[in-house]
Image (tube, rainbow, N blue to C red; front, side, top):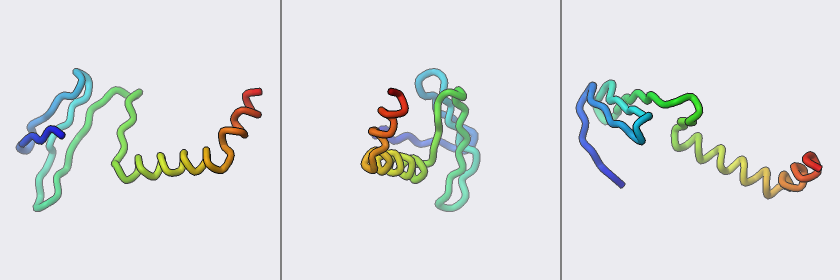
Length: 72
């Protein structure tokens, strides 16, 4: 993991097309802004983990077999 220090209104650039800006620091909470191309999904980690779990549950529940039947 790369750890960087940033102050309010300072930014990071990732892969030439994602910008993360520190908008506000209040106590132990940091508000960030993310500018990324529309085709790049951006999720909070807890939401991303829920999506992954739901996808795994769908596969475990026979979702892949249903998909194979659908695609013929």
